[in-house]
Amino acid sequence: MALSVNLAQINSAAKGNSDLRETLTGIHLALQSLYAQTGTTPLTKVDASASAFTAPPAPSQLAVSGANGSFNISITTARGAGNASIYQEISSSPQANFASGVTVYPVSTNTSYVLPNPGATLYWRLRSSYNQAQWSSYIVQPGAVSSGLMSSAASGSNLSLNQSNYATVDSIAAGSTATVRVYGSGGVGSSWTSILGNDSRVIASGTILNVAYATNGFVVWDGQKYQLKPQLGQTFPDTWVPVGKVSVIANASGLVLPVIHAVVTGGAIVAYQIVNPGNGLTSAPSLTITDSSGSGATATAVVSAGAVTQVLPGSAGSGYSSTPTVTPSGGVSGGSAGGGGATGNNGGRLYADV
Amino acid sequence: MYNLHQQYLDLASGFHVIELRDERGHRHLIQLAIGHDACPACGSVHPKNNLGALDPAAAIQQVTSALNTSQQQMLTYAAKHGLAVK
Image (cartoon, rainbow over all chains, first blue to last red; front, side):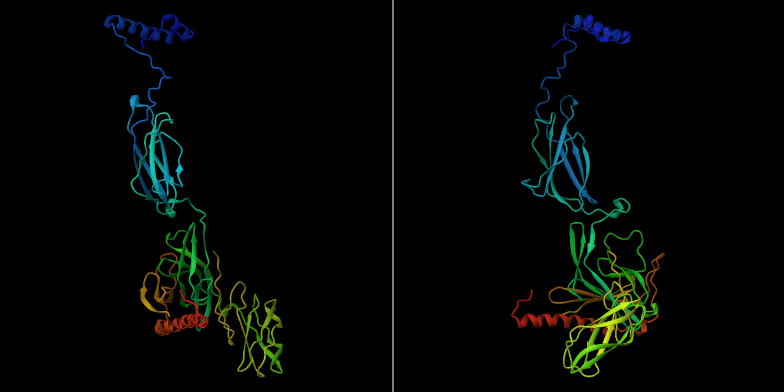
């Protein structure tokens, strides 16, 4: 359709802007002259309301790769008529046929995206449109793409991680050194579970021998074995799993376990005598009662100001000789029984701090 | 029952690592600390001064025996009550 603008319309449109009026008038006159010379319409209207680009463009090309916990998406567009903008709609699914779990990302004219989604494996597809109404057919990325795990180097400083574990760590006396044990809810020798985000894995139990008393440090699982470190650096390998903070307490800390005798009447233990109340106790030591003939007796120690002030008889048991042995162990707050024994040697404690 | 599966020296961390496995694939690690804790600054590990007194074979025997005693008690229980062991 030929242009039909006249000079009066140009004057009206310019609204007193003489520069604009003169420019438009000059263009108009030049076009009129060209039309007179050639007999052809030099310029036609562009009607924005016309449906010039309603048909969808040819499908664009999609390339998806995964690295460091993110999907990297690159789109190569097939340019349409008039260099019109092409809208792209990306969607993903854990299923190859996109039957369920489909995530549709916001429509955009962008041709590259970085979508963080650590540890995910997804199928990807793309469709294109000029007007977001008529869409091309889907282009599907061949095969599933894994984003991989995000390394700490790629995350912000002091990122909070959903990490926990069900490990128990403690230590027992072993002569001149201590033994540190790492185990699960099934007791010594049972494996434990490490939780990291949605991921979990079972890790073997461990026994660390020849550990010096009064050692402070941290137990970590390095993927192959345990390591006992005096401290953890601000950064450590992503493959390491923190297990527990260690504080092995030796006798040198001032801990003295109590000495307790049992009082036997008719084969049953009816009372306890505190021969030495002990010192430095921060929790009640466990009391184990052994005898050459009797069994079944239990008792509980009460601690105040670092010493045993009372022993509460539980079951009296039966068949006891006149000299059963009462063996205290532990006695350090937050911990399970240490090495214990008649020597009062406490193997130390490992404080879980995870 | 747990048996010795492999053992090696990890020079970087200063551990004599001993891996026990049972017939069901359960693992237990015995680690003899033969080096001092790594220097926080340089990470180097130095040998402890009691290496001559260490008896790895005895340590393996002791830990293995404790694990197997515990496991045997459970297996005895299972046998007594006719339970399948998985």
